[in-house]
Length: 357
Image 1 (cartoon, rainbow, N blue to C red):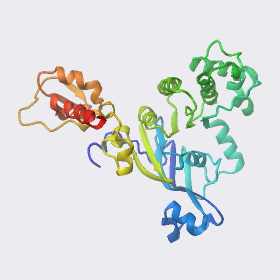
Image 2 (image 1 turned 180 degrees about the vertical axis):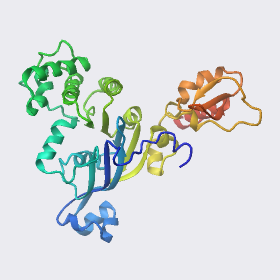
Image 3 (image 1 turned 60 degrees about the vertical axis):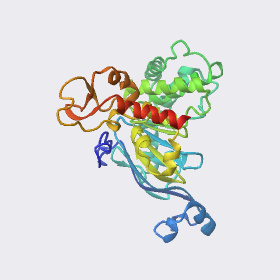
Image 4 (image 1 turned 60 degrees about the horizontal axis):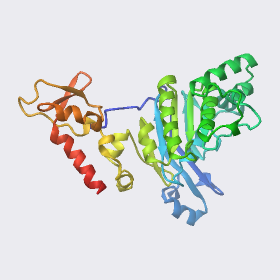
């Protein structure tokens, strides 16, 4: 790996990963299980369908999600992202491959173990809230605990904690149809958190919300993640949302993984023309860190003076660099890794303006 590729290594061994996916396939159609391991498996989605009538929704996907990470899966409609998230808890049965959660093999789990997993260890938040219209907010939030068999006092106390956590205090006794879309989605978040899951999965939860409410809900997910530290897998078709929320982003196309990387890796080093085109209009100064614009110092240059950390976003660090009298030293923790000056910052800004003109 290059220095930039090593900057945020979330890869975990299978024993440490919150979620570990290996060679996962989902093929729809007669004799779909006969495709894998044959030359037909290498065909494109369109070619395979024309030849066999089978459709590959997810093709040989592998990745790890580290504990506490927000891992975003993104792609356009039909890319396979929603099928993938359903495979992770076997809402859809995989054609091939393994999914391990906390080191436990989900793909070989029997019905009892799978039921326990869904009740206690994983929570899902969908685009369509799925609230029970005849139940008040407090009872919707407590519903999963009721299914689990918790007594009424325990589940209502826990539900009230989660109502307060997501900013719905005072709405405990309201019914879903008395709430706005954003508030209903907060109820969905509270319900998911109430079970204290090890892993939270979000399948395009904010797609139906208007832009302002969507932004508020994105900020809410960020806040909740900072407060509760849950491992999250977030599905979206929105690049801006992926860049805002994700520690790392997996980009899919036609069921395959195109690139996995941190937001700055995806924007700064797109894997191919597809990704390059995808990120072409992203304001790079708002995503790239100083690590991407720094350079090695000349002998005797920047031996003292201001210090900034390599993971600072360029736009956030720009004023400090421009105000400095000379180059600014860039550190990775305690290690001196490079320098950055006015020209390095302005080069990114000018390129950004040219791309948008």
